[in-house]
Length: 162
Image 1 (cartoon, one colour):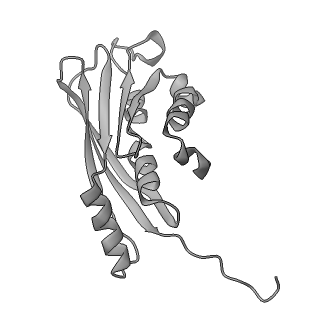
Image 2 (image 1 turned 120 degrees about the horizontal axis):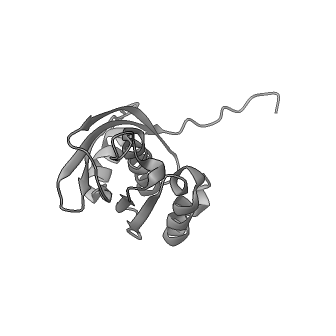
């Protein structure tokens, strides 16, 4: 994804909403803070994201939460950082029978802590976050625990051949 999109939050939100894997499963970014500090995502229950029991397909529940912590963190940290998913688990707490939503956030304090650790010489940091997927009544449908990997980008080595 182009770093230029991060300069334009509304364009970034539009891009995610028309991104085929999201559009095709009915996942929508409903809000995105102009400073990329938070994002809200929603998924309605449709015939194409329903499992054999008439509830949300588990893979769709995870997909609606998969990239957002990474995408927000990349935008908040800015150029010169690499951010990846390191691990994730999902606990299905109850069947999702209608619209579901999730909120993703990175506070200024959390961003400062990551930068401070890297400035202090840490090769990488692994922040962990838990995201709750809620139904329209605010009941927890799923809990997703993610571990990220963050480091400074390695500079391209200059070779004597160039």
